Image (cartoon, rainbow, N blue to C red; front, side, top):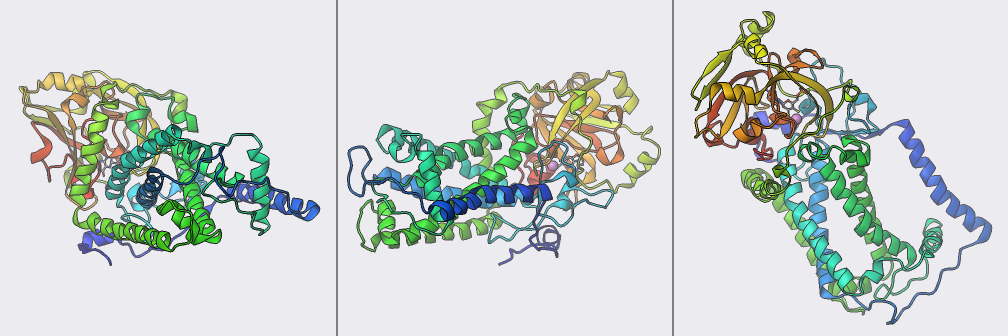
Amino acid sequence: MVPQFTDAERAVHFPTDRKFFIALKPSVWMIIIFLFLITVGFAWLQYLLYGLPVLPALPKAPHPAYPSGFPVWLRLSHWVNFFFLTLIIRSGISILMNHPRLYWNNSCKPSSAWIRFTPLKTPTKKYWTSKEDARYISPMLALPGYRNTIGISRSWHFLTVPFFLLNGLVFIFLLLYTNQWKRLVPGTWEVFPNAWHVFVHYATFHMPAEPNGFYAYNALQQLAYFSVVFILTPVAMLTGMAMSPAIENRFKWFPKIFGNRQGARSVHFLVMVAFVGFILIHVLLVMLTGFTRNMNHITMGTDNNSSTGVYIGAAIVLFVISFCIYAHWASWSKARKIQKWQAAINGTLWRYTINRLKPTSRFEKKDITPYFWLNGNMPVSEEWKKQATEDFIYYKLKISGLVENPVELSINDLKEMGKEENITMHHCVQGWSGIAAWGGVSLSKVIALVKPRPEAKTVVFYSFGEGLFGGTYYETNTLENCLKPQAILAWEMNYKPLPPEHGAPLRLRVENQLGYKQVKWIRSIEFVSSFKNIGKGFGGKDEDDEYFDLLADT
Ligand SMILES: Nc1nc2c(c(=O)[nH]1)N[C@H]1C(S)=C(S)[C@@H](COP(=O)(O)O)O[C@H]1N2
Ligand SMILES: [Mo]
């Protein structure tokens, strides 16, 4: 079921090489083998030397110290959670494949990746963009799948996250409000040795004696559920937030909880792997330990062997699968709606919270990363090429639109206005980052010079280069955002003239925004009342053509 792609879309989204590929660094293999040996290996050793450990008896009937049965809110939130988690994981996989490499360092040099989902260890092409580097993923596995679909996959991811969170908060609140928390929160440190003893059973292919899950869980089960609710989910949230430029620019310490932005991204991925691992084992054990009874627990809230629970469970799973098929269809037929919904919900949330704080974070010289990925098609325009051969001495930046004083400025004119220097982190929407020193004129000075009229609310930056599907690359920013201290027009990168591949002669830096706002090869600037009449009207080339986040003013 390949959507009706045009030829250009097909070339981008459905490349000829669609093989799934995964490679880990040897040191990562060593860690996995080591972890396997100290868990499964020791379990076997203990079993062979001392036999199976004895497990404490757990109640099989109502017990005053344990909650009894599963109230309706708990059953509901369990399935609501399943629904949103499915969407979050599937869209997350799509996002991951847009930059199919994970690192522990901010430099993101391809060869430093600890895991990659592309056969290309080190790209050999001189101008190799991160959009070219993206990999295909089957829509059976990911939402919406295919290649270079980050706009739509992010829309799904962020549309579902607030509901997933809300459901989780209601769940935790009711858990604590009732005595159901006793199911998940261990009452004694004995839970650790007991969990190990249960693990020795599983690892050596013995089923431990079953408590009745209606009243109590075994120690390993309890620890697993506890970790999912109280460790995995919060870590997923924190690592997700640590990747955001809006947060990093207000709270520089935040990504450092995980080392750096890439550490956060790697941990975010590992949390996903843990979730998937948990779901697989959880479902398997539900099946192996009295499937019909267990299904009645979690659907009907009854503790018997009638087949109703299995039917309801199957119906819910069918519903979730149907929704995934619908979401696949909607990703192509209703992409604009999904993009707008996402912006309406999260844009509003952000506007009232983080956006009110001033972006400030700056880095130091020692933080500058030796590697900096490239993105965007190099300009093919003759005008730019000619100017490039002349070192841009005849270049004139045209500033027009709703201003009192339209101007044409050479790079020298701009230099005379004074230089601002910023060492900042670049956050590409696809996942990579880099830290560089940028030198250029503060946008607020340029704005003061041209004197925008009161109707001017938005600033458009037009490039010499083209977008992924052709046509002039442009992005807009609110006038307000352009007045923030970190907004500069840069002609220097790392204390040297801006190299052609990074946007010579002039590029935008607005560090509280994602990478796609940092227009390279700027040809002209226009002040307008709204971005609605520019391009397709969504605020930028990537928003127009690739459904990127509509967040004009973070
Ligand atoms: N003209 C133009 N500017 C652009 C792009 C583009 O495609 N065309 N891509 C953007 C994106 S998505 C990123 S991540 C940054 C990358 O900047 P770099 O190549 O200097 O790393 O440029 C931004 N500016
Ligand atoms: Mo990007």
